[in-house]
Amino acid sequence: MTVRRCLPWPDKRLRTAAAPVEEITDEVRAVWDDMIDTMEAMPGVGMGAPQIGVMLRLAVVDASDTRGQAIRMANPEILHSSIELREHDEASPNLPGVSARIKRPRAVTVRYMDHTGMIVRKDLVGLWATSVQHQIDHLNGRMYFDRLSKVKRDMLIKKAAKLNR
Image 1: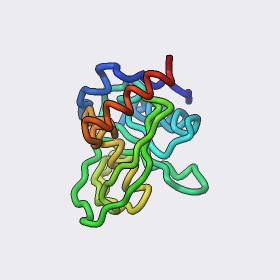
Image 2: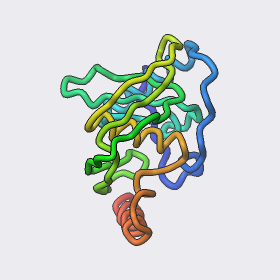
Image 3: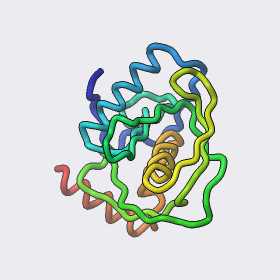
Image 4: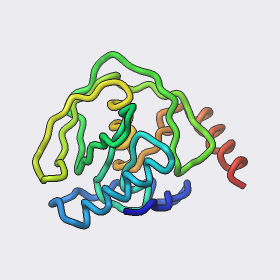
C-alpha cells in the first residue's frame, strides 16, 4: 500500500473518461488500497482512480466519522438521485488550495461492482452521496468546478494557479 501522487491540474487525464473494469483482480485491489492510503493522507472522503493517473472506473468513498469504512467501487453509476439538494464545500488534491460550495442531490442509489466482483446496489445519503457523485464526475473526466458558472470557475482556477506557483 502506497500514497500516490495526485495528478496536477490541468493534466489531460483529468479530462478523460476512465475505462470500465472487466473483472476484479489483485491489481485492481492493489489500486484500491493505494487510493485509500492516498485519500487518508490528504485527508479526504473519496478518490477516483484517474486522480492518481489510473484510467479505470475505480472509486473509493469513506465519509465515516471513525474512518476505515471505505467502500471500494468498480464501474459505479447513479441509478436514482433525490430531488432534494445539499450544499457542501468540495475540493480536490488535483487543484490544491481552493474549494467551492457545490449543490448536489442529498441522496443517491448507486450500483457498482464490489471487491468480490458482485454487483451491489447501495443507498447513500449526505456526505457519502456527495462524495460518490464527486468521484463519478472524476471517472467521467469532470472536475467539481465544472458545476460552477464560467466566471466562478475561471476565478477558482486563477486563484489556485496563484497559490501553487
